[in-house]
Image (cartoon, rainbow, N blue to C red; front, side, top):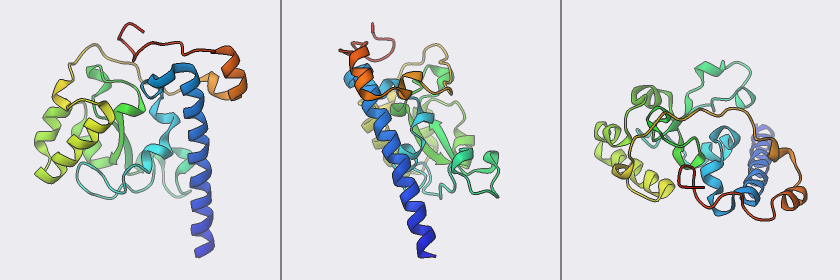
Amino acid sequence: MRGSANAASAALNQRLSEEQAKARKLEIIFGKWWQHYAVPYEFRWTLYTEHSACPYCGGSLGPINTVEGLPAHVEPEMASAHIDHMDSLSKGGEESIRNAVYVCAGCNLAKRNQLFVDWLELLTPEFRQNASLIYLKKHGHPPNAFKPTTKQVRLTLPRLELQLDETVLRKLFPKPIVSGPPGHGS
């Protein structure tokens, strides 16, 4: 039993290491704004390990919702850990790790595309405070500062640049290609 736990821990550490390498590459391309451009699906394991339980209800996150990370007997649509875009893409929320958190399937399905401030009102006081603090930490502003805009596209394909070596990226991008987050004159 201990051997399989050690193997699982090693596999997780390998995936987290791969995601850290992606973060370094994105920082070369986008500078300090890289988290605005980091697609959640490229950082599944990093997001999954941020919280040990659903930040909205305290429930179990269960298996991660990705084919590569599920035990053989669990179908992808039955996985209980879902990525939630705190500010819904349909309301103009960013498709980024700054705007993403793993939650239980029940909370993700109940929240749907509600504004985060409206969703907070449905949570118990303990989890409302917890979710508000997570939002503030990730976004740098309180949930009520979000202003809905046009629908954002869900990005699911990997960035081709992430396949390149860091040395090559430094030559291709001697300075960041943006001067701010998406939609702010970058």
